Length: 494
Image 1 (cartoon, rainbow, N blue to C red):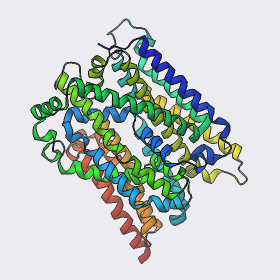
Image 2 (image 1 turned 120 degrees about the vertical axis):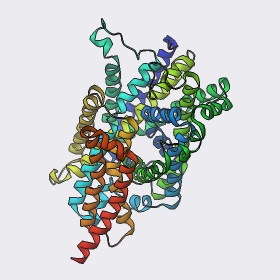
Image 3 (image 1 turned 60 degrees about the vertical axis):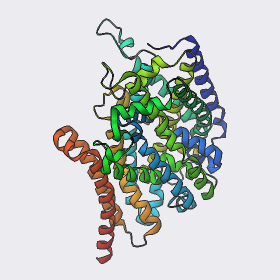
């Protein structure tokens, strides 16, 4: 039973009002497209760290990390460790991100055009938007299911409910999406940065307080004993877990490095930074957060396993954590947690909508912009694109039921563009013999494997299950790199 009460509702309401006020407060500073998309490239280190951390921790992340803790124990935190290592190494060395920021571009495809031509730029933009929007498609529904479960509205009666009562999840998240879209449309990246800072503070406080209460009431030793008793060695060592093993490690190593190098929401902080050194320091400063990003919700998932056990009636591995939280948190702290999760979700949604808008505007529809295109027209078009993405998310990600495993869906859809774009970026920055043919081949091959896997899931589930998401992802990264090499060398030979 949830302990959500009027005090919690008041906390959540005050937070939402503060967020909207902060988002609207900066609208007068948006005069150019660069202000809207990159905040005038004036972001400093501390604001960049807060914004990146807030953006990359959404409810969907919390749900997946908690599910991993529930299913795999402490082994489920491996992606966070790999992500932290990748962030630190890339930021410390400046690998790829230094030349990218020094190029002064707004998006990855803009950089690729300078090396590989306009055709590769447009193709890259299409692949990035396709992978990004499909990846983001589950965010709203996962966020809604978490919130409904925690406040005790997850279960619906078999009959007799009104339409509004039976669709409370969709209506609640539609209203939240509308709020996020409004302040993003009004203030662009400036609104995102200001609200991200507020959301980072609220989110951090909520995560720390809930985790402290968990450790105080249950204790770390009890959680570790639960993992050992129910999951054995596989709960501590991913190589000993039959569902993980080496393919899991290799896939996540490719995935995390590709994310750090080319995930547009991360790179937008680098490109909005004052200079390349600031962008690198943002990466280094945010690195350890990615361990916490997986470990803290993972502990919540282990706590759900400790309290509910495996296979509890009416509880899935995905709903276990919010079900446990609903009965664990007292009044007041419940409101703080929901405000923290709303903060996480709103910062993620606003940044992602702005990110895919920048790629569509700057790379996909750029050839159709006429000479003499004014800043006023550019701002209007960017705002319309944010609104259009919001409509897509509303119908595809919320009102249209998705029938795929959460982590498989996220990993595969992200690989549609991470595999090829990371290959293109490394080649663009460090391989002089890379050619447009190699770039085009990498885009096609990198997208082909994850798309084929998604299709097989629908038409031949037994075949896709035999391949598995990890091997399909590994093939995407390796295949894209080989395609770049073979395509470039054959064009040079010709």
